[in-house]
Length: 274
Image 1: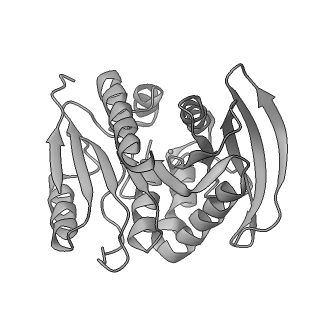
Image 2: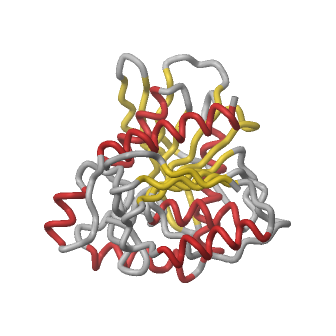
């Protein structure tokens, strides 16, 4: 294990979330820019219709791909922007709809109601994750031997649970995700992990950090833990500060930590996907 503290000067989980078998699919709402193509993709997950979001680089050669798991607010514009940015880096990217029907939350109570079942039943959440993963692998231009997943807040927790439960990816990244989850098993956890954590995250106390590191160290897991001084929960989302004020949540945007963590992700991908 490597623990790295980034020299920066630099959500809301509410105990759970953040301040955000595949059948034949159909695609709609295709859009184009100079460098990428985007589209909504409808697929089936755990008996429900899910509405994911795909972004493709202009180049049609086979590429590594990244699955993106949203904050507890659902698959919103922020998640789509991150998905687009991954495509601009040269990855095929696909954003998961963990709630089905494209549902999103307008307040913390709605977000908790949507996110809660995924925490309460990790295996069902993994099935939703896996349905999206299968959909990603079926998209044009995907090199299925080079797949990663990233997640934000709630999504970070879902990514960590998926790889702890045996999903075999080339890389997994959690941005300000919760660290309490299913137990780590050395026979199941084989994916290299990058944790991007705000050092001032009130929703993930130091005791959770200590326990998480100890658990992964005990099984010899391949992980890197990076902390960003001054960064709170949801530090990558530019809307977090205003959302925190609106709902009295301990979340805020931190531009330095956002940039540093994105660069750390890019370096991690260079190591494991290329």
